[in-house]
Length: 239
Ligand SMILES: [Fe+2]
Ligand SMILES: [Fe+2]
Image 1: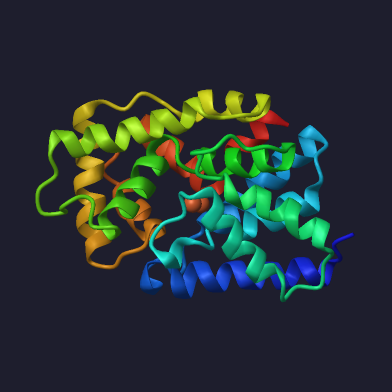
Image 2 (image 1 turned 120 degrees about the horizontal axis):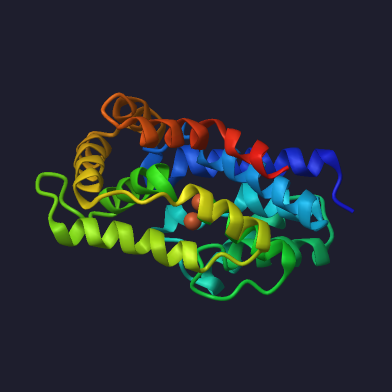
């Protein structure tokens, strides 16, 4: 059984790593982690999964980022198992939580219901307008795109990653939410969002602030969708 104090310790650890260590501290203040936890808890409740395992996994899902990337199943697992050794929970719970973290980027099939949910919560945060902003931010900070000159290939790279992740959604409810959020964005609109995001990301601006800057220049449909994503108000439509 995971008690509230352990969840609190896990949360603290997740936030510290995400804000202070990942990307050299450049993502401090971004709300992805807390939104991913809320989405994961929502999906877990609906699917009658183990909410404490899901919540713990969601808080820790990005903890391999300070090592450069968080795509590798074994590396993710090793890192989180080490982190969890300082938390007062059983070995079997450690293993269940680590399973949620290991496969969250979708390169390996998540093996448990709880791992599927953490994976899906992270995907939901990578869809639609927010997804374009978040993935562009990540690629810019990994030096995988040049913010000075966004090419058509960059646009393709971002959009195809988002579509690939959408197709990898595992649970029924998440697939429904994915369908709702992954609105069609034209190539030109996407290029504009990616160009603005990449420049700001290169200058150390967080995704939350970028979303607020971009918000003004979006068309009404995209504006509304981005607002819903930042506030998670779309979840009300799936209760
Ligand atoms: Fe991640
Ligand atoms: Fe994430």
